[in-house]
Image (tube, rainbow, N blue to C red; front, side, top):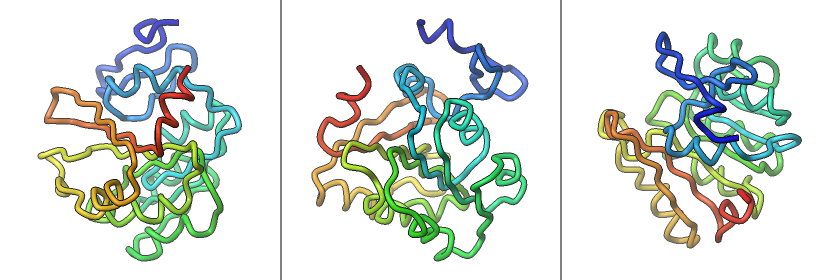
Length: 186
């Protein structure tokens, strides 16, 4: 099924929705979603810093999702296995309660915490896993440089792929070890 046949645009929210389920897709750039929604998520372990519509969509695809959010309403919307945490070190360190994940998403508020989430993400990602960072180097977002993340990408020889969208410089980054993502998309 082609991407354009799998999604519809919800003009009220400005978000793409899954035609089959009616659920809002994860709020990543459409250029990233084109390939991403083709993946099989059944049984995949996913951790999210920042939960909500993406959490609901992943669960509907059969994924096992754990996560943390600083916003009580988003956490409640996302359902079970989502912790509310506002204190920075506990928010960042919440992933340490778990072992490894196939996908880790860094997309929560406060945005100022995101760069500090990357190092713990590296410790908890499977060798063939991927890390997704939304709003990567986006000028309209408070954190636009990502110094710690870039340092870890270089030091660990990770692959960084950036999916851009022309609205407000919106970018979604995908980080993987070697060509893990490319090899699992087929």
